[in-house]
Picture 1 (cartoon, protein in one colour):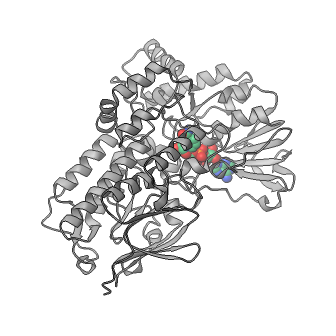
Picture 2 (spheres, rainbow, N blue to C red; picture 1 turned 135 degrees about the vertical axis):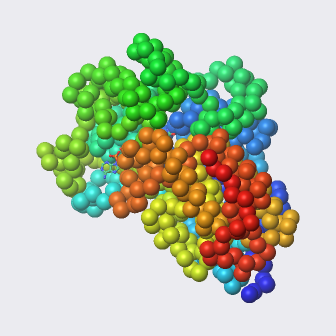
Picture 3 (cartoon, protein in one colour; picture 1 turned 45 degrees about the horizontal axis):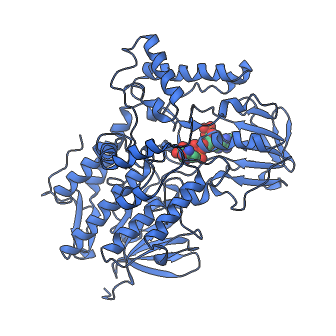
Length: 554
Ligand code: NAP
C-alpha cells in the first residue's frame, strides 16, 4: 500500500446548492477540499434550466440556505415564487460572499471515480484526462440534472432548432413568428407553455399524459411578509425541519377529506386554489393515503379545468384520469389551462395520435403533418440516479455502482452504498431529496457528512462504509413507507418509470421529520449500520457488526 497522501482530503462533484455549502463547510473545518463542476459557473440546476417561465415552486422565503443568519437577513427575495434568474443571482451572491470560487474548478466534467484499494483513496478522472486523488468523494450531482431527449424516430432529420428545457441556451432564443412544438407537460412544460404561447406564431403542445397543476398566484412579496419571515426565521426553519414531512411549511390540515361534508371540502379546496401554490395538496390529511379522499381533490381540479378551458373536448383531453393526484409531482403554474383558450395554441393528444416520426419540417402523427420551426423537449430527466450513473463509479473489488443499482438503487440512508467506502451522496436515492424542500435536505446531508468526517478525523479513523445488512433494512424501510401511500400508483419519475428499461423502484424516502431523527439516532448509536475503520483492509465485503444496536426505523 502506498503511504502517499492524496492531494485532496475531499473532492466534491457539482457546484449547485449542495456542492457550494459542502465546500463552505469543509473548508472552514480545515479539510483540503475542491469542487469540480462541468458548467462554467455555479448554480447547478438553476444554471441549466433557463427556459422562459422557469421559476421555483417552493416559496422563495423557504427556498434558501439557513446556515448563515447574516445571509438570510441580508438577502431579499422580491416575489413569492422566485424566477430562475433571481435564484441564480442568489447562488452567485453566496459564492462571492463566502469566497467559494477559488476552490471550484469549472468546465471540468468528472467521467470516472475509482476507489483505489491499494492506496485507499478515490481517483477521479476528468473529461480532459486529468487525474485527481482524494480521500473522500462527495457526489453533489443533483437529482434532476441528467436531461433526457427521447429517442424519437427521425429526430436527426429535423432541420429546425431543437431545445431541452433542462439545458437552455444562455443567450436566449427569439421565437417570434415561429411554429413551435413543446413535447412534455410536466413542471417544465407547464411553465414554458404559457410563455411560448405569447412568443410563438403558433404553439403545438404534444401531450402524452395530462398533468394536475394548481395556480401559483405569484405576486411581489410585501415588506411585512418579508419582515415576518426574517423576524422568525429560526422558528420557521426549525418547524420545517422537525415537524413536517416535506421540509416546507404549508397550512397542514389535521382532518380527513372523508369526514368533511361536500360543502366543507369544496370550501377548503376553493380557498386553497384561490391562495395558490402547492398548499392545495395539504387541504386534508389523507389525500396521499386514501384513494377516495384523493379522488375528491382530483375531481375538484378537473372541475376547474372544465371551468377554465372553453372547449369541453379540449378540457377533457387536459384532465388527468389515470393516476391519483399528487403522486406525480404537483405542478404549479401561471395561466396554464387559460393558455389553451388562445387561438394560436393547439393540443396534440399523443394518446390518440402518437408521433409516428419526426421529419425534416415537423412531426408526423397518425393524423397529420404538423409543420414546426422548433421543437422544445420538456421531457424531463433521468432522475435521482441519472447523474450518478453517468459517472463510471467503481468501488471495492472494482464493482461498478451502476451495475449494483441496475435493479434499483441501494443505499443506506441515501448517504452511502455498501462496497463504496468514503463515497457520499448528497440527497441520494433513499433520502427525502425530491420529496422535500431540497435545500432543507441538502443542508442536513452536508451537516451530517461534515460531522461524520470530523468524527473519523478525531478518532484517527479514515474509512467509513455501510454494512450490507443495514443497507438492506433501509431499502426495505423506504419501500414500506412508500407502499403505505398512493405514490407507487403513478408511473412517475420517482419510480424511474420515465426512462425505458430503468428499474421501477420508488427512490425517495417519504418524511423529512422522521428521516432526520433516524439519521441522528444512527449517529447516537455509534454510527449504527456503518463500519468505521483505520485502514481500508479492515473493510470486509459483507461484514455485519453483530455488536451493534440496530436503529429502529419504525
Ligand atoms: P417530467 O415531470 O418528467 O415531465 C416530462 C414530460 O415529458 C411528461 O409530460 C412526459 O409524459 C413527457 N414525455 C417524456 N417522454 C416523452 C415522449 N417520448 N413522448 C411524449 N412525451 C414525453 O419533467 P419536468 O417537467 O422537467 O419536471 C421534472 C421535475 O423537475 C419536476 O417534477 C420538478 O420536481 C422539477 N421541476 C421543478 C420546477 C419548479 O420548481 N417549478 C420546474 C421544472 C421542473 P408522461 O407523463 O407520459 O411520461
